[in-house]
Length: 294
Image 1 (cartoon, rainbow, N blue to C red):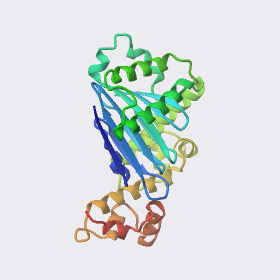
Image 2: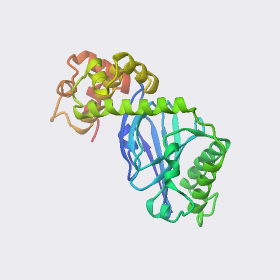
Image 3: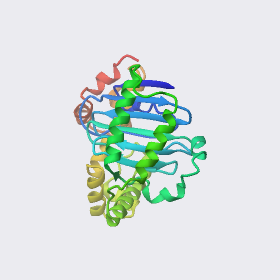
């Protein structure tokens, strides 16, 4: 059994879990503080992720895997497989703990028919059992990380899998069919906007261009974005470009670039407003970021 702990001071440092395809963006003001605890067992991976600010997560789960992700805030269980792709924004002070069953281990589970899970993927499943298990797993992982052993290592992987499968059989609260359809529609809409923006990340698209790219009206785009992401499409774009600018500033040294060059590269044409927006989001001026020790 191997356990690693990462204390992080930037959203990019959260991307420490192998096998995941992830893009993170800080979406609320303040100094970022996060933590990742990662454990490897035989064919099983367990991780806990904590973040103090709101963060946009765009992710693909590891190939061939089945993921049981527990939101310790509201007790929801989310199932993901390799086809699961999603963009969402975490609440502040978010914590999740997850069990990732690898492809080799899945082959041994004759009792599990993966095709029966299709309607459950990316759907919040809330039960008393999921709430209790999420908190127990978080506590267990934290104790193992500091050298305590509240459970025997032998058979731990099998216990975790058995518990996860048991929770699937427990009655759970799920959104009604209409809500599920709305969620799926919103995910597809946001994915279309995400793909459009990622194809030209340095550009600023107006709301009409985003709506046309998503195939919806401007009003629908604004409503669904505000409901799902928590900000307007224009605010979302600006926050993303500020994150990209920050990455450039962290990767360069003063001899290689200037704040003005980075600002213009990411379509911020007024340097004073860029510095103000940057400071409001990250808690430091862009010039300070550029001077950070490498």
